[in-house]
Length: 154
Image (cartoon, rainbow, N blue to C red):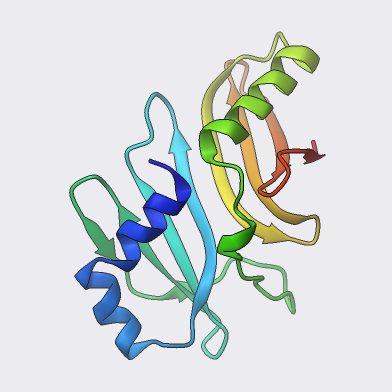
């Protein structure tokens, strides 16, 4: 599924609508998926600044499952930036293609077995933060702009 389709599926679900009525202030903070073969589950998180918590929703082809708010994993005093849907011009498949090209060109001996993807807003910009875990248990982290598809950091 494409990122905008994931968000649309979530926002049109009864689970999300019910939650949103009770929680109007939290904003979209991240989309997460683990890529091994096919992406089947996404996790979408909404940040509540007042309580400094994230409420996450698992989205599959069959269901939307909300989870209770959790503490935010961040540096002390750091904020959680919101994602802007309008700035998501690159989809997951395209971001993974950019990461794959960089990996094959610069790190051909480090073959990935898992890919951890977080679409988030960082000081570097709104990025796909992609981490490869390789066969030799090394990690390669690549940040790709969700607007331009350019590699922001590696």
